[in-house]
Amino acid sequence: PLVLTELGLKATLEDLLNHWSSRNPELQLSLHCPDAVDSLEQKITIQIFRIVQECVTNIVRHAQASRASINLELVSGKLLQLQISDNGRGCERETLKTGFGVLGMRERINSLGGTLMIQTQPGQGLSINASIPLK
Image (tube, rainbow, N blue to C red):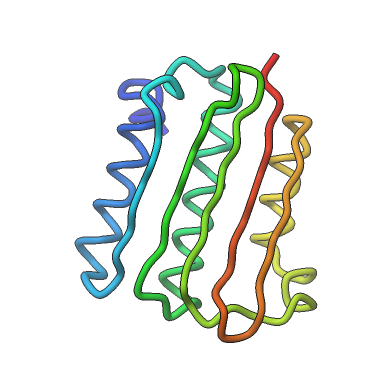
């Protein structure tokens, strides 16, 4: 999106969460994102934005969560870690294998040479952890 190139990843994510928060006041969304993410390559920031967008959309539509957090962390300038978690209803692991959203996220992370792990159990929320190497 144009706003991503104009404002940077952090402001764009803040805008995304504000959008969802205003429409879903029962859901508390939090973002931890260092300013340094704005200096990442555009191909990385686009993929991260799309993954967060997909996750937050799924949380709102399916999770029945009251809280969700998005955490981005740069590790020694060599690794970007993304964690998205919610306290929603979770799901069976088998369900994750057939969802297009999960497949799309996995493809996005793989295209950046990264890894994606998803942890969930019925009634215990869902957590997505991605690690992306920075060149």
